[in-house]
Image 1 (tube, rainbow, N blue to C red):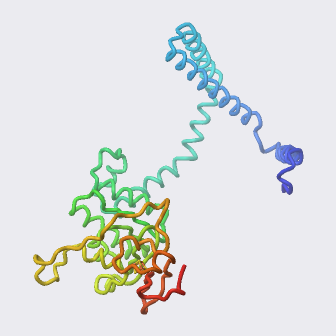
Image 2 (tube, helix red, strand yellow):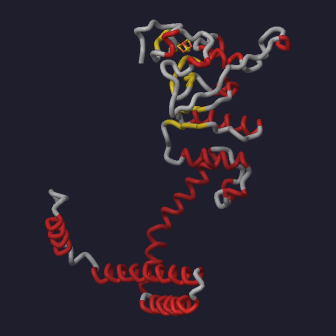
Image 3 (tube, rainbow, N blue to C red):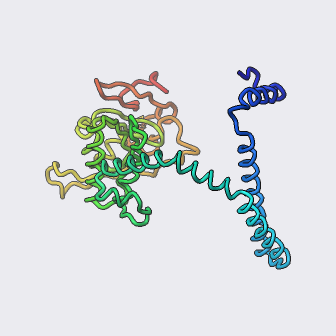
Length: 304
Ligand code: SF4
């Protein structure tokens, strides 16, 4: 065991001892041959770069010289390491084939899981050969490859048409139930939230300002920012909808390099008080399952 990893001479001695001890089992000749082969491959690469460089700068004589050197070295490598190259190729095929087969089987399995038709064909496709919806599904399949306990889906339906959007949401929902995977859904789309989520956390300028159940957030929002968001979308359940003007939240999202002091929403909040620009409200529980960070629901001592 190497006890002191900072002592170079100690490490060298240990390695030499290990090699001596295992000399009978290690084919040092083969290892040296492989080492030499890859060193020459590096030289070949470097010479090729020099040839390209000379071609770019218009140094024809140098370019021709490098070209000849590349040719000669390539020929030497092919002749000198013919057997070794065969051995390496065989070893790669022999050892890697079972892994490749398993990886392919798993990829097809995951593509089927996200409802891609003809997964055996799609598995060999390039991304540009797939539609937007198929690419999105393939991406979800990739995210599932390591059996995650939680999937973080950041705007997963952006730029998709409504039909594909509905299909993607359906897949995420199914996966949630099928493999018991939690989903953290990040979206600006309130309709998607209503459809997908059990609990909702509302963020404003990098801070969590309200957290509760989906039912509560739509029926009884508390934070002025959440209330503003809810009033900015048309609601089918409102009476005389056509006569009601949709609300907007005045101002714009702050620059987060120099965020507003205190409550970050205060420059846009119609309920702002003196304390709001001075102190940052803490996220406090106002009822079971409902938390809000706003001085309308907490006193001045509850600050972050
Ligand atoms: S803390 Fe003040 S500024 Fe912030 S949301 Fe509440 S009332 Fe508005």
